[in-house]
Length: 381
Image (cartoon, rainbow, N blue to C red):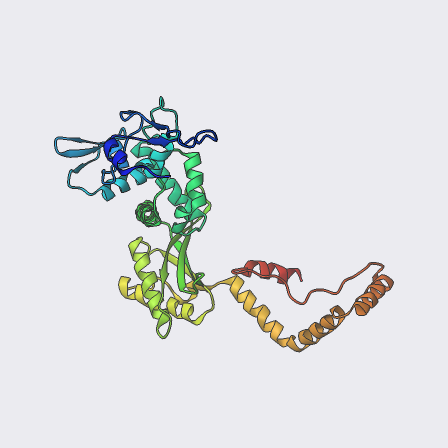
């Protein structure tokens, strides 16, 4: 079925819709075809121009006044030049007001009588700063990486807890942590200036998850007013490994003590028995003697860590009994290797000790930095 070209030309472009109904009768095959034409001036149907410009969602949230484009989300008063690209404005609306092209689509699904201005109510600047500090403190105390603030679960938690708060990027969180570090550093300098008591310094070498070595320095002193022991962490610093590591460590500790005003108030230093730490103590004593022209840190004031020394003694004793320990391990492994041997051990235990007994494990579970736990287990054994 087709339309006559002459009829189509007479209809023109104003016809919105044409419905052609063909009815055939068995009695009369020559009955004319009835054509039903829709009204040409249907106002309900609008023709879409293929090249019509699309309205941007950004224009719904901004307004132009005196050649300046202002943000329309209250109470924001930010403005841009009319030549500013929409990408810059879109980034501002997404980061500070949680608005996007998707939020416009969600608003369109709501009732026509409801006016949607923003997805969340914005919060004040002072409260936002307090929340930034709280997030940074949470990241530090939980020993989490700054990238944790960009995780989907963390953003969802804050959006549900504090509507309107914009979670900061990992870079901004790291900058906030560094600002807190600087503030706390100067607070500690002021604190050490407020009293003249001697302090003891402890430095120890560790390695992070990437096996990059670093040293931590802590100080301990007795509070004169309350008579209690007080301790605090001064700082961390990285040391390049290799030859001269002890000297580089001593220089870093010396500069750190001078920064906090404690270089002439050191009573004793505590370190482990590693050769680099021992050499660092010797170089540090020499630097303090050169700086103040007196023996600030005598040789007998450089103390080795008792826990570490005790552990080294236990390891030396284990080396003496190592052959017996190796034989004992073989016996335990033989007892655990078969069901018949385990049953024989149970029968022997019942006959000798009147209780059942299982063969012990060959090894125990340890964790990183478990020196104190190992020492407690050794003393218990």
